[in-house]
Image 1 (cartoon, rainbow, N blue to C red):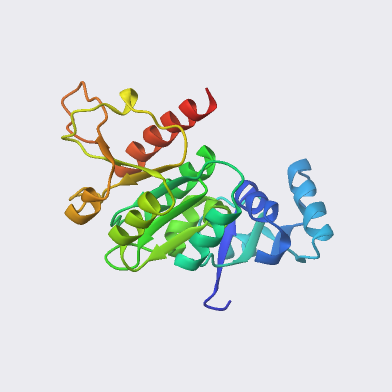
Image 2 (cartoon, rainbow, N blue to C red):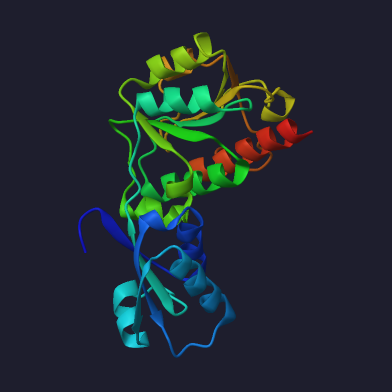
Length: 249
């Protein structure tokens, strides 16, 4: 397997990869002795996309999946690639609805990045933006946790995050909302409709000063228990789905 490919296992993961077209799925191994309707449907879809199919046994699938639950199917897929600022400009110019973007300011944990990508996909976010430096990229772990969202949601890495936010706010007229624990205004009292950028801070330090200064408003999640803060991927999920609720109302 080359360095630009990774292995995914299981019916859900392979289905998600095939959903976005066969060009990213390089080959599929499957257990021909397994009589499973869902597996059969996936193989039929793969044949229509001209994906290479390899019949094998459970032992080989176990080896390829490296202990993961493969449900009789494993695929080799191209690694998702990060995009640049030019791709962001093209994306915004081609949108036919109000932009909905997520910015991750220095998230370090690939599990958190993968979870944020997965939530962003579910909430209908058009792109996830992160800095090139001092932040995790699309590692195999992040892509695995994303469960197909690394391929479906554009992941854009920028050189200067504060500058990008300033351009989104001033040149593109997007409303930039940052999440900060000390903010007095609650997320639920904020207007999240229209062209929107949601900005989440890193796991330990939160929003950096220069990024914070580019936010139109800072909001917080109301906390009623003894815990002072939430994991960034959990907080991202709450924030994005509140925005989705408002945008659909």
